[in-house]
Amino acid sequence: MGMALHEATHALASDDVPVGALVVSPRGTLLGVGRNRREEAQDPTAHAEVLAVRQAAATLGGWRLEGCTLVVTLEPCVMCAGAIALARVARVVLGAWDPKAGATGSVWDVVRDRRSTHRPEVVGGVREAECGALLREFFETQR
Image (tube, rainbow, N blue to C red; front, side):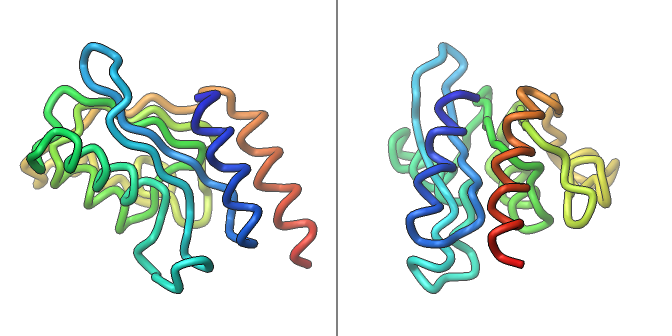
């Protein structure tokens, strides 16, 4: 989670919501890293999770991330949760829960919907205070 938090701070340089993510293999090898780049890239899909998943798939040379873990500082949204499930990520480790747009248990539970063909394990609240503080500080400066 420390690496994801570090990546999240880089999103601040482009005035984006500070979210960082990474994908690790079952053996713990770093496969992909991402941070929010929506503002920088002017791309609504440039969320940290999507970018980390894309990089991990490129690193592995295939879209199936079976056995991999995605670590992210903020609970994934619906789009990201869908991408995580479709990529066959085995586990999602998240920092802060998102009571407004979370899709791994807070508002929606896309990844554990019984109709889904793949349901990753979700571990939440890892270094939650640090992840939440970074987000709160960012949004306080935006108001």
